Amino acid sequence: MNEAPWQGDVVGLVEAFRSGERSPLEELEATLTAVTASDLNAVCHVDADAARRTAATADVSLPYGGVPLAVKELLAVGGWPAAEGSIPLKDEVFAEDGISVQRLKAAGAIPAVQTTSSEFGATNQTTTKLHGATRNPWNLERTPGGSSGGSAAGVAGGLFALATASDGGGSIRIPAGFCGLIGLKSTFGRIPRGPGAILGNATSVEGTVSRSVRDAARYLDVTNGFDGRDPRSLPRVEGYEAGLGTHADEIGSLRVVIVPDLSCAVVGPETEELVVAAAEELVTLAGMRQVALDLRLPSIMGVWGATGGVGIRKSLGERWPDCAPDLGGIERYGQFAADAGFTIDAMARAETRRAEFNDAMAATFAEVDIVLAATNPATAFDAEGRIPHVFEGRESKPGNNGALTAPANIYGNPAIALPVGRASDGLPVSLQVMAPHFREDLLLDLALIWERDHPVELAV
Image (cartoon, rainbow, N blue to C red; front, top):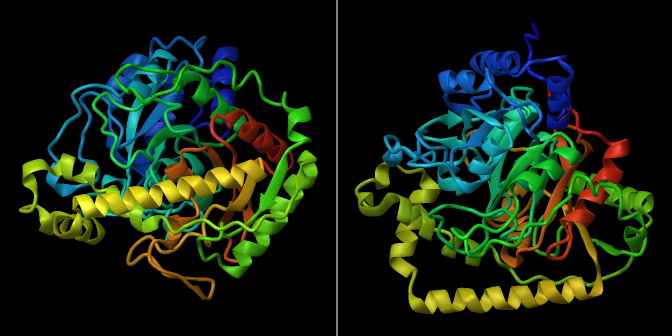
């Protein structure tokens, strides 16, 4: 009997099931035991009995056959809590599985636990009035980031190997970066959302936080492809995992620019130094051609924040404004601000800025093929309290934590976070690699090149 959960990647776990080294039921029990004993506060709901029934008859020939699945609380599993990290919704229940969960279950994954997120996914610190603070496994006083904080903490902390995540402004890459994992944000529409998902500010994608590149590739293989319930979703693409390592010739011809701060954020000096060193190493390892580019991206965080509150209001419905005292400060302020200033003129200004930003991103990718930057401006900050505006001695404006990741959400192109080592405080630092639309294959191959010398380390 294996008492500890699998500490390798998901693909390796499936192989262990098939060889008889482990069984789905004993892996599930190990996961449930570890979750109960954990001080990370990464899980807010456990569905043990249903998971046990499924694990007992798991088909390990499937891509995720028998693997315990942790699902972020913003993503639907029928019959599970639909609180979205918010007290006003604490009694709500999801009516049906989301599209991704349907596909994961069809591939053999077993929904077992629900992971914590920030309230409505609105901040990159997973702390809510409903669930309390989720902890970073590298340092329990620090945040795992958000909004997919519970998923990242659990995967990096050794509780489970497979967890869903989502990313509307960095919520896959930020926690992956803070926890030392791989975090792929795919092209907008690559993985369908819903059913019933609204467009909102047209930035949100679903995905996973991973212990390996092949895990990220397999997740794409299982979940990508058009679904009529999400009319913005893209046609299916086959063979991400099978195609790993097959783009060497193309990668050798890529033009790459290194811009740690993306010209729109403040990055701490130690983080900048580590990110630049890693970026230069990746350029050398991959044989890419580094070029100079005077990158100038318009400020976008205000637009992203102003247009992102529609989903929160939809969820709150008639509870607003009576529920205001039960909301977190940022969420409450955002809703009051929207009431006061979200007019058609404000929307017109936001769309004008979005168009300007998209033009700037298009001009960038006309000059280069790959952009290398920091994922986060510094290492993980405190698990509770205010989100800081000073990073390793450099002062920034509010919103700086997501300013490095939101550009790929606004433009809709894919980006991946890669762990590049740890800073002097012992916490992970992350390199963000950005590619043009639809080129997840290039990101996965670059990540594979990096992984050969720099595999993911767990905080266990």
